Length: 302
Image (cartoon, rainbow, N blue to C red):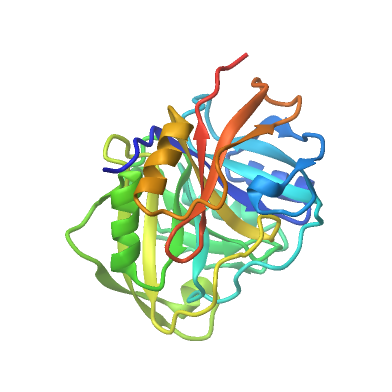
């Protein structure tokens, strides 16, 4: 039996330039709800040797803390490292899905940015587009009205997996997600839409929590998929996805019973003075391709 996930808390975006990314996300309708700047703390239960310290913002697009946020971070200890995935068929968290009210206005606002790629926008109302920021992290911009999203902002995550059926089953059996279609479908990632050299055929499938429609996990299995997901939490890119639960220790016990590899038990983490809680209980583990999943016990707000 799957654990009971309440909602998606955030997707973590690790970047080189914190203020630069904060300004970029403001063009996508996000604002900083809190500053995340705790003191150095032991990184053992996060899989980091020695002290760990990050600096960041909780980037939100609404007033409801149950809407998925972007956990925008840069690391001070250890220093942030690496670069985001360059190819569309690399295993791992590939893109943030952002829902906006006016796709054309968003495209226009981004034209002033020095981006690695800003895809062409068709004149047809509601056409989506894709771009990469200065760190190479990809964003898929969708029209909220066409896609029937109730909320603006972070609407989902694109995840490339080596075996879509195995990954689908894992998210269903352990986290309680459901599929929005009967079976994976075939599609083509068109080169001109993504700024790459060649079209890529892939299987795809969309998952969501059964009681919410505000956040999806879009699974993809592209042809010639390769590589491995980020191996350290302080790597540039989309490292982890966090979900809220009521009792994290109970979830840990159940996941252990189901054979899910949780390298460390739940850890209590200081979040610093910028958020209205003293700290949170967090648990880190990995999906079949090594993408980091975080559970957060819903804290009491001060």
